[in-house]
Length: 200
Image 1: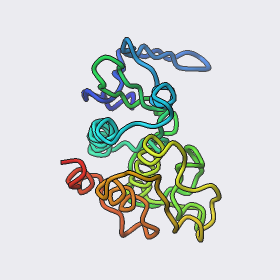
Image 2: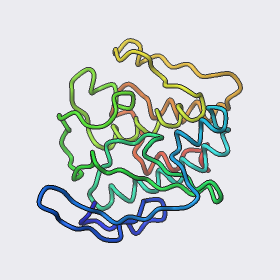
Image 3: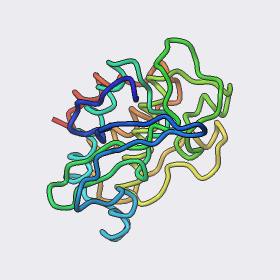
Image 4: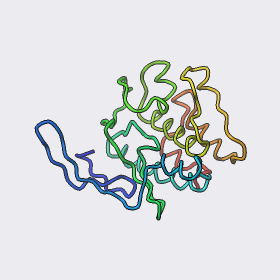
């Protein structure tokens, strides 16, 4: 991302960076007041309502689309890597430490967080950037609205079965199911996902 300036309101801005003998030093934006989305959810009782989740998801998808349009894949989308400004509810995607150049061929190296890796990683130890990113968005949405993870073991049998807490809308359940479709080729693209009725 150093060579791809964010210029997007939902990506943490990099002001400058310095090359040291054994490391890099980066001067980055620090929104205030803010906290990471995981901690924010915990302060709200562990779950967010659908309206708040919708606002967060819209912003996140815009940020991820911006990255992909500029040839970057994040590879570690999760609540802990999203900052939320507690006064405006604007989010910032952070931590591109697992990020890679976007490519059309599968990624075969392990990066990111196990709970957010797509089914195909556990079946074939590889995944494509687009479907893999959409899967992680679905896990993140489920996590902030349901207060847990959609799967507790990482077997193909369990990862084809999805349950939700009571009281959630049909639209929310549908968009999460779209993201977590077992076959990568059946998942929507980021662009298609942004057109889902639950987000409109």
